[in-house]
Amino acid sequence: MSNYAAGLGKPGSGKRRIRDLLNQPDNRVCADCGASDPKWASANIGVFICLKCCGVHRSLGTHISKVLSVTLDEWSDEEVDSMIEIGGNASANSIYEAFVPDTCSKPGPDVSHDQRMRFIRAKYELQEFLKPSLRITSGKCSTKSSAFLTSSLSRKIMDSFRTNSSSQKIFQEGMVEFIGLLKVTIKKGTNLAIRDMMSSDPYVVLNLGKQKLQTTVVNSNLNPVWNQELMLSVPESYGPVKLQVYDYDTFSADDIMGEAEIDIQPLITSAMAFGDPEMFGDMQIGKWLKSHDNPLIDDSIINIVDGKVKQEVQIKLQNVESGELELEMEWLPLDQ
Figure 1 (cartoon, helix red, strand yellow):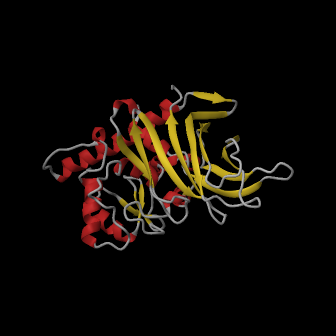
Figure 2: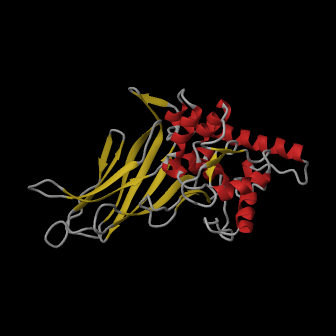
Figure 3: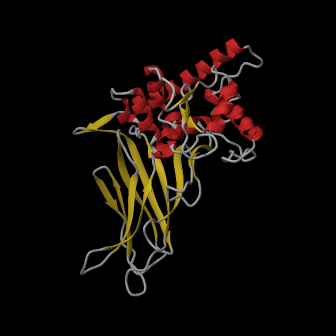
């Protein structure tokens, strides 16, 4: 289950809960083509979609995708709970787009109807991008058997979320329950901002919940190399990791050199969906997509590498005249 959506599972108006989920950053664009401000959803798949993709989903039939309007249709409690449990686009896409080949491009908002149809059919009906253990194939089948297979797939995906989520809840510290550890390797900075006469003395600070960690200071360097590991405990109700870069000053307050928010949901969702990464060879299992409202320079790919779930991240620092940062994140289940 998406931890961003965990707080939405409380009693209340079904439509209000769906609207609250829609307002999460990853749900503000269509899950299939990236068009902004989607107003439709596939209740059984768990994604928010735009009007154009909605038309394709309807053509697949309700046995594959049950389309509902966020504002106009009535939602059952079961449909609302299913959307909340999946958590929306990032969570669902980490499953349904786990293996999009390089030869297949995800459509943009302005692609032709045929391109849109081919991608959506491959994604949901033909299950071409799923990890192998979730694929359900039957050759040629009737609508009735197809509906059964799609329902079975939905159950397998939901079971994957539930099983992996519950298995991660291992220990508590006070009133805070943790689901795993996040190892962040701060690699290097590029073209950082000048805060002294000609240079800066930069260091990086990470915040998650009440935790605050920082790197060492690199003196007089606008292109510092740290290669320093910082370990964060991830609470059950987590948000983004807040990153800040400062210039160290001996006799006055340290000057800010930029900041960014790192969305760790795609990494954690992908890791939990796959379970034990040592059972798989090296492969891509998800991604955090670049958008206008996040600091990514390029899409950030999530891979299994040597039995570990890792994500390379390159960000442009925000609220500053210049500066980029390169880091790597690794997800560690508590039993490790």
